[in-house]
Length: 527
Ligand code: HEM
Image (tube, rainbow, N blue to C red; front, side, top):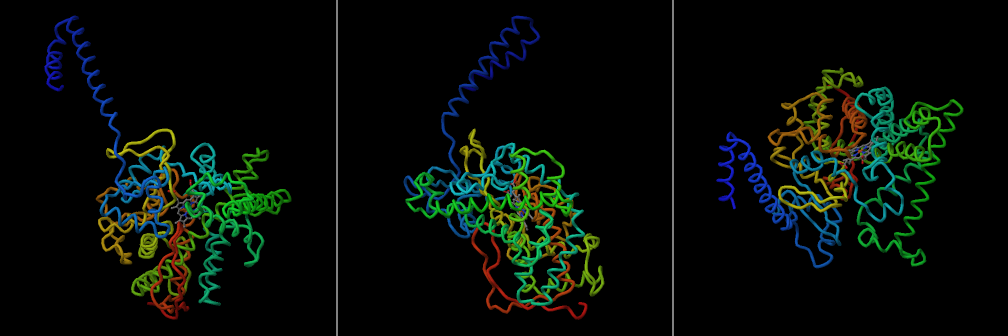
């Protein structure tokens, strides 16, 4: 075939100078060339592209029972060592693509974010109504509205307005640690809950029995349980949801009660703020500003406002708990790193003083220590599942990615890749000191721009997710974690562990340390 083409094209390049008939020849020959290329392409396309490699599975159900229910990121990482960084699994007709490298994640979830930003459909989330939440809603107009509204409050510049509130709220953590250090878990929760609910709805939480906190927590607990794909049989066999309720399917009953709680909770929390705005007692908050800005909202707008306000708490509570408990654990296990950070704080802030955001740019070791907390045990080891849109198949490195595939980014694998982070299982804040870039800059730069050659890239590029689905709360929560970490290190000595062996990590979507205990005592002298 190529033998025919070459003489034709040589003849053409000469004959261009020879008048109209040559132009005719040129046109005919070009047509033939295009025809042959076309035939070649069609016949090539006729050969179906292979799927990425994956574990073999069983007939019909394929990998349905291979998908590990716990610590899935570890299993995927292990498979990727033999099968390659991009894996394909198939569970009852649904393709699951697992991306185990920075390159694959960057090229697909960020480089092709326009088509890889859907969320997988699961029967249980649909039944409860969670697919309307900003976290799980499909990409489309509603998702874009969520993102726009979020960025108006949570963008990198906007969050700076909340810093005085964060400096104030961290006192809840300090007071708690002074009163009952063994309950540090509870104090962390109180600190983040109190901050997030004041920010989202202007609510000043009055203790653990606060009705507002209880509603938000109930929705959060249900969400954590029910939005885990595959936890209920109905997610694997969606047809089960059409069975009538008298059959007594556990998932049906659970979905009905959770749906009621979400609906009531969304309305009730938002109505509190509407009333406060109406009678002039509303404190500044996300919900209040949405209500004040739009005095004649449609039902759809109200629904979006309700979700976008509430999600600030539901998406932020457990994730920040994970990051801060990981910090306490890392300090209990790495006293030398703790001493180094405290020495830096003493030098910059002065022993016994409380750090503020104004000190942050001079606390480079503390900054690196926080990065290492994000890296070693990411709160979302696999981000949240994305989905390729359902319109067309995609092609990547010669593989077919079927339309509608669930796409999982194995963030944990990237953050433990020895080619990116040498000695990946060691807690080494020092690794970032050579590549220190400005805080704002590094957070904004997407993972897509992480050159493969760059060592020890800022883990926040991975820990907060990817592309159009990346975490909108990342700037806010990064501030929340900085002020807590810097304040606790300035005022307390953490560790050693008093609960025996080093705890493992919980195995689900949001992973946090298993229960542990350690000493926490006020510092008495400078390091
Ligand atoms: C340490 C704390 C946090 C971590 C590690 C974290 C991480 C993440 C990750 C990995 C995702 C999934 C991204 C993806 O699918 O690629 C996500 C989504 C999301 N996060 Fe966060 N997050 C944290 C705190 C927060 C806070 C405080 C808020 C709210 C103020 C928040 C709001 C959201 C929302 C709304 C989404 C869904 C975004 C979408 O689907 O478009 N997160 N987060």
